[in-house]
Image (cartoon, rainbow, N blue to C red; front, side, top):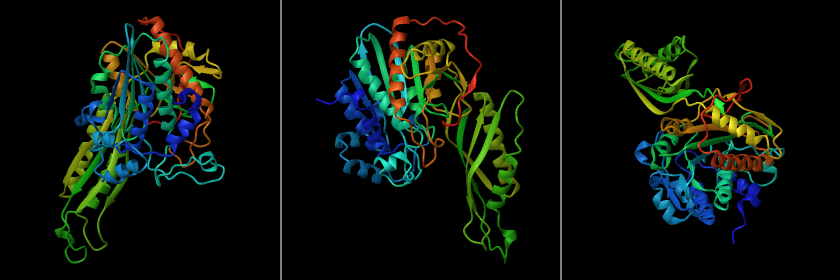
Length: 444
């Protein structure tokens, strides 16, 4: 018989940490999750295209997926599962049907990042032998802890006398903002009374819990492509249409997009490349950029201005521009009623010594798709943070989690689910909160 997940939180998290896979390549990760879910025993398990419509995915990679499939195969991934995930349709949804009661969802993300993990002796994963086994890829944002929570909570609810419907979304492609939309549009998100989403750390220490984040930034990732005409830079520069020059104009003008009186906006061009040689007028330029806003409407404003900027810059230099939205996510705030409930629950959990009812997020997260979907159908949603002492920031080669927080997260989530069951339907009241804090850096 499989050892209970609750008794092996650390070993499970470390096993997942050793095998990080980036967005839409989480083949081994999904297979490993399915193995654990099957051992728990659920009423419905949907994998990949059975969990969502592949057409709803965002930020789908053009890279060759076969090396990632083969790597998963070499590590023992079930062949039938790999076949089901063809084309990068990763991730899973697990459902418990336990009679009359509330429908509660839990969302955890599963992808890693393209970061080479540190080999320093004082980096615990390296020192204790669970450093990433995949070169250039790392769980540098705590998604290994999130998956561990999802599995452990699923097991705990399955073994309890819970009455209702419980759905766990093991969501791929959070780091690229690509997986939240298809999960939100799936049948599994329909009819949920409550949704819990959760993140580890974000500059909150071990023993601290944020019951719900507020003001996540609406976000879009875009690809900007400029096509010009090449020419000899010495003999006939006048015959060229300089895509690189148009790119420079785009970059300069993008940072001049007017800020909006209704709230905060952000724009950034994070990657730019153009040209082939010093004596050739560049005929093509490519940029990767993002626009964010304090509200979904403000993000749309910034995105529209960015599109206008690149197209006008291209036209100025006799070029053509393409503006492709790779992924985007809306703003969705945690509901005060759930913030209040989680605050009360977390305050009674052993090891939790400080509870913050609400905190500004200041970054972006595609869990907001699921939150928005549940809220638009009349349900309640919250995105909580379970603190952990991490030696360096998220998305760095030396990021790690304090493994004491694994048990904290399980207890807060399980107890919140049972309290939702007890209180259902949770009354919509104006919940009193302390002053809103800063959630720290992290997210997308």
